[in-house]
Image 1 (cartoon, rainbow, N blue to C red):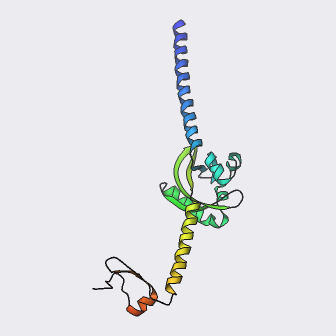
Image 2 (cartoon, rainbow, N blue to C red):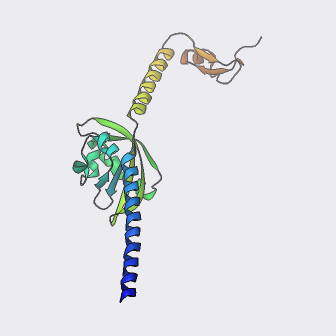
Image 3 (cartoon, rainbow, N blue to C red):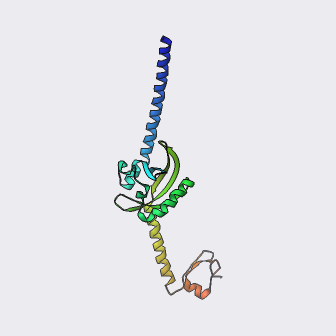
Amino acid sequence: MNSRSTELESRIATLEGQLDKVTTSRDELLSVFNGLTIGVVVADIEHRSVVAVNPATTAMFGYSEQEMVGMPILNLHPEQAHARLASTFEALLREPNTLASAFPCCRRDGRVFYADIGASLAEYHGRSCAIGFFIDVTQRQQAQEALLAERDKLETVTQNAGVGIAIISPEYKTLWANSVLEDIFGDTLGQICYRA
């Protein structure tokens, strides 16, 4: 009886040690999850609803964790993006390492922001889930839109200046010419425009 008791005590001590390791590992992973500066959304694939989020996600979207868990993923995006979301979600499921670039998302207050969204697949609490990684790229998107607007303005000015304008390389090759110059000389792109 004494050896049986000793064996059980040893087995219990071993199991308690293993439980401590699992608890420590779980706490460390939770700390990493909560400490990420990018948003992480775990979504149930079958129900297309949020299962878990990290604090960066709640800050990004403006909802509490309690409000987000159970929310349909459609609610994270503006209505005009819903059709695109369905095809993007399916594409991310087929090829999890793809990126949905500058995808429109919707904050709780209705303001739209843009995020690069990557995804991976995992089982989470017995459910097949997609894990979305959200990086807010609104400033980048706004800078690109401003740059395109400025380019369009410059194009309008150079094409309507009424004089020939060209960009010439140090080797005297035409790199770019406006339509006035092309009307006079034809297509000179890449040609030497000056000889000594």
